[in-house]
Image 1 (spheres, helix red, strand yellow):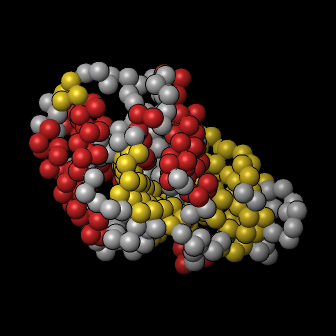
Image 2 (cartoon, one colour; image 1 turned 30 degrees about the vertical axis):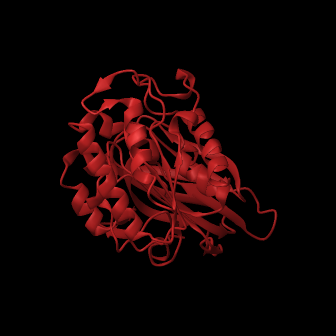
Length: 327
C-alpha cells in the first residue's frame, strides 16, 4: 500500500521545517526560504544545506515491512546509511556504499510487535539530499505519526554539527543529545559554515528551549584578523539572543583538531576560543562549554583528516555535552 500523500500531509517527518513536493517524490527541508537564500550566496554551502542532517521519519505501525525508492541529488560524501530504531532501541542500519545513480530501494522487514504497534524511527543520511519515492507498507496496516515531544533542541554549527564524519546518522552528536535529553531536534549544521548573523531567521517556525552553537574552526582559517572574527562573533550572538530570548544557549568552543598548533591570520587556535568566551560573557542566558574538553586529543576519535570526529568521537562528545547541559 503506497502512502506518499499521507507522509506529506501529516506530522511523520521530524527535524525538518517543511516537506517539498517534486516530480514523483518529496524532499524534507531543514531551513527557511530566507535562510536558503542567504546560504545560496556562497556556492560551497549549496549541497550541504540540502542534506538531511537530523531528519527522521517516526511512526507507530502494525506493518510487516517498509519499502521506499529514493534518488540522490546533492551529496558531500560518497556513502550513506539509514539507521532504524524500534521501540527506542537500535535495530539495524542499511548501508549504501558507494552511492549509485538512479533509483535505489530501501526495504526493511519489521519484527512482530510485542505490544499492538511498533514505534519506528528511521534516521535519514546526514551527508546528502534525497528524493523519496513510492513509500509502501503492508495493506491495511496501521500507520500513525508520533507526537512531538514537549521540549525542543536547535543545533547550530558547521560540518561537525552536520555530522561529518560519522558513518551513522543516529551517531552524530545532535541526534544523540536529542535522544538523551528527550527533545525534538532541528539540526541546522552546515559544513564549512562560520559565525554569520545573516543566516539566522528571526521568523524561524521552531521554538527551541535549548540551543547549541558550535562555530569557530572554519572562522579560524577564513577570517583576515582576530578583529574581524570578534565582530562576526559579536553580531551573531546579538542577533541570536534577540531571535530566541527565552532559550538557554550553550556555546561550544572549537573541538580539538590535529593542526591546532598552527597560527593563522586570526592568531592561534586557542585565541578563537578565548574570543568566543569573551563575547558571550555579557549574555546571561549563554553558557560556555570548552570544546577542547569534549573529545580526547587522539586520532582514534577522528577521521583521517584530523578535524572531523568519527562515530566513537561523537559518542564521547555527546556524553560530555549532556553532562554539561544537565549541570
